[in-house]
Image (cartoon, rainbow over all chains, first blue to last red; front, side):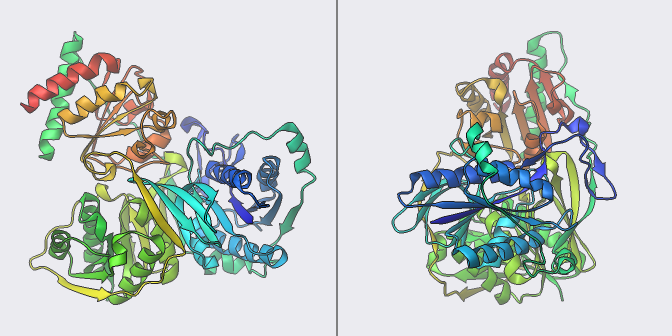
Amino acid sequence: MKLLVCLKQILDPDVPARDFQIDPAAKAARRGGANLVTNIFCENAVETALQFREAATGEVKITALCYGESSAEDCLRKAMAMTVDEACLVERDGNTNPDAAAVGRVLAAAIRRLEQDGGPFDAVLVGRESGDWGVGQTGGLLAEELGRPALGFVESLQPGNGGVTLRRQTDVGIEVAEAEPPFLVTITNNEDNVPRIPKTRDVMMSYRKPLQKLSLADLELDSEEIRTGSSIFEVEEIFIPADEVECELAEGDTLEERVDQLAKRIHEVVASIG
Amino acid sequence: MANVAVCVLGSLGYDRAAQGAAGAGRALAESVGGELHALVIGPASDDAVAALAAVADRVVIGANEALGDYQPEQALQAAQRLHAAGGGDYVAVLLSNDTYSQEIAPRLAHRLGGSSMADAAAIRADGDHLLAQRTAYGGKAISIYRLKKQPAVVWLRARGFEPAPEQASPGDVTTVDLALDPPRIRITGREVAAQEGVRLEDAPVIVSGGRGLGGPEPFQELKKLADAIGAEQGASRAACDAGWVPPNWQVGQTGKKVAPELYIAIAISGASQHLLGMGDSKVVAAINTDADAPIFKHCSFGIVEDYKQVVPLLTEKLQSLAG
C-alpha cells in the first residue's frame, strides 16, 4: 500500500503572547525570533501513517509532501528521519500566505504527478488544522480536488477487511469506519499518535533518502492564477485583541465571606438564564 | 434575489446551536434583503421541523431513511441537492459547530463553487462578499476574512449568536426525496462516550477543570458543583491529555469551541489555546491560586484561592441559594 502525508511548516505556535506581533503590511504574524516548525497535527499524521505501516502485513510505502518555502525542506527531512520513505517539496514561489483553495489545488496537482510516476496513493493524510491560522479547510478542499471520499478528525488507521479501518473523534465519542482506498483523512491527536523522536542514525539516513523538488511550472500551474483567480478568501484585517477585562475578585476577611460573594455572583448569572 | 440558508442535521434537532445559526442567518438575510431558508439533512422530529418553520421563510427537508444514520459522503451529497432544491441563490450557507457540520463545510463549498470558513464568531455582508471574524494564531489574534466566492459556506460558533426570532407566519415546508450513492467510507460503529445532559456546545453553563486539579478525583467534586447549578462539565487539554477525563470534554483550540452564558474555569491557567475555545462565553468566572494566571485577565469575576477550599463550600452555598 502507499500512503501520502501532507505537511505544513508554521511559526512555532508556542511563542508566548507577550512576544507575539502582527506585521500590518503582510497581514500576518511577524516572525521575530520564533522558530519554524512542522504543524503538530501534520506530525501526528506522520506518526499515524508509521503506525499503520508497522501494523500492516504487506509492504507500505509512505511519502511526505509539502507546499512551502525552501525552509520547509527541514520538515520533510524530519519526517524522513521519523522513517518516512521519501519526500516531495513544491516550492511556493513568493505566494507567502496562500489560501486553503490554493493549497488544495497545488497539493492535488502534486499528488497526481507523484501518482503518474509511482502509482496511486491508497490514503492521503492531512492534519485537521494548522497551529497558525487554524482555518482547517485544506483537507476537505483537497479531498474534493482529488474527487475522493474523506473522513475528518481521525486518530488511527488500521489494516481492515479488504480496506482500512478508521477510528475518529466526534462530539459524542469515538466512531469506527471502514474505508475503501483511495480516500483522504484529516488527522487529530490522541495519546497514541504523539510523534516519535527520530533516532540519531535515522536522522543521518534521512539525508540519503530522495527529496524531489517541484515548481508550480512543473505541475503546469499558473502561479498568478493560483494566487488570485481561484482564491476563495483573503485576510481583510488582523489584530491582537485588547484582552484586559476588569476581573472583580471576591473580597472579604474570611474565606467564608469571599466564597459567599462568589456564590451570589454565580447564582445571579444562573438565575438570569432561567 | 439573494437568500441565506442555514443547513442543519435533522438528527441533531433544533438545539441551541441550530437556533444560533438560524439567528445569524436571519440577521444576515435581513441585511441583504433576502429570505432565510432552512435546509434539513435527513429525517427530523416534527417538533424540530415546526421550530424551524417558525423562524425560517422556507424549510426544505432532504428525505432518505439512510440519512438518519450520518455518513459524511451521503450528508454532503444531500446538502448539495438541498442547496439546489432551495433555489440555489444563496449568499451564504451557515452551519453549526458540531463535528459533522465541520467536516462537511469545506467540501460543500467546493462543490458549490463558493468560499468556506470555519469557526466564525461574527459575520456580515459587504457587497457581494461575506466578512467572517474568527481567532487566529492559537487565540493570540483576531482575523477578519473576506470570503470572495458565493455562496460563503461557514460554520459558526453557533451558541454565541442570539436565537432566530419567530416570524409572523410559519415558512413553507417541502420535502424532497433524495437518491444517494452508497458511501465509500462507511461509519460502522459508534462508541458513545458516557455523557449525561446536553452537548457542551449547547450547554448554557459549563464548569471546567484544568491541570491544577492534579488528577481525576477532583472532577467528582466539580460534578457536585456542576449539578448544583445545572451545568455540564468540561476540561482543559492538559486534563484530557492526562487521561483524567474523556477527550470529548476538551475545550480549546483543538477541542470544543463553546460560548455558554456562564463558564467557570477551575484550576485552569488560561493559555491562549484554551481561551480560544471559550473566549466568547458571556460571563467567565475563575477559581485559581495564582493571581497572575492569564485567566484573570479574561474573566468577569473570580477568587484567588485553592479550589480545594472553595469548591465544597461554594457547592453548598449554591445548593442553598437554589433552594
